[in-house]
Image (cartoon, rainbow over the protein chains, first blue to last red):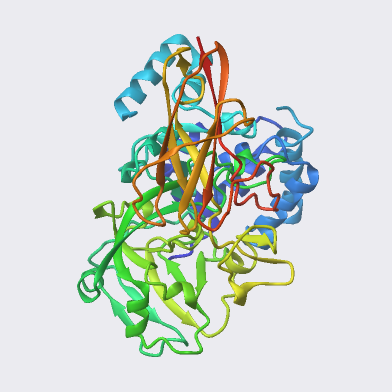
Length: 96
Length: 408
């Protein structure tokens, strides 16, 4: 299959997966980074269904896995932002 | 059966009633979400219709993960249009049957060759196997404490008649060599980021040359649906669906174990925790081993949770039981929350890898909630568990199913 750049991919992905647009992640600091970084490879309902049980350690492990195993092009600063957003909004201590 | 029309009608009614009800209409009324599921599943799960499918329980859109509503398992063969959908990677091409090619070869099969779909059907004796296709993580969402992953309820499975060519015959034509240890499969689906490991799975040679292991091109008498692997997929009866690679494009006989993430890093269970007969020794480490055979299991398909039932009248209890192919020998039902058990009647046996229907007639004599439970045993004495066998990825959930109805 053809490998595409992330930017091209995002452009292509939007119309092809219209149903995804109904997913509303919680509006909180870091959401845009989550939408762009996580949403490039998978729909954001993956986050919803895995809530609210993961603690900080588990969410961090998930973000690390996306980068180190699945090769997500996410830098360290964004990884930190994403983890914080997930812990706060979809974590064991967050609103449920 | 829920049709698209009735789904739309319900959603429309809900819209009239206001936004708060819309969500209920989609997420609660039409589909019963198990109370044990993570709370977040309630935000995400809804009945959604993929092209060619009836509404299924959407857990994730991309990659698509959709489960079959429980009531479809009232039928022995799960309808193709209701069969669950499970993908790891988001790039899923619509395969053109005329252009599709299946490559066969590898270091352990020197006479490499290519098959068209027509040749696959023509060159090998067609065989049909009835088998349960069940995701390793079926029921993961019911695991306590929760583990991360796709949070399935009961519906990441189905039973079908699979028709195709024996993998053994396909491998023999390529000159399967004595030093082959594994046979690996790749499908047309792939990642969108280059560094994401492609989904490639292998099985040990003994399982690959089992006469029941096939490359299927038909399911329940029809071509495979796109979402279930058109035009051909691997069918490994008795083993969990992770090996049943869809949109198959390459079969590789390997003289060394497959090393990719999907073999070495995923789909593993701790050594010695589950009563498994068929092991995958070339992949086993000192700590864990690939998941292989399904554990013995059963579901109650009727009554449904929350049904209203009359005291003093017969209550038909029924469901399906299955295992890794040793054969279901006993299903027992309890109507007192597991204190006493009575043998259910087993239906006709459609084959060792199939769902086995069972039924039982209960007579509730008191009003109030009534909890029905079922448990199955197979020919080698394997049983369902009362306590979960914990494992990191939440595989092999076979706790007894319980359904509570209201007797009035």
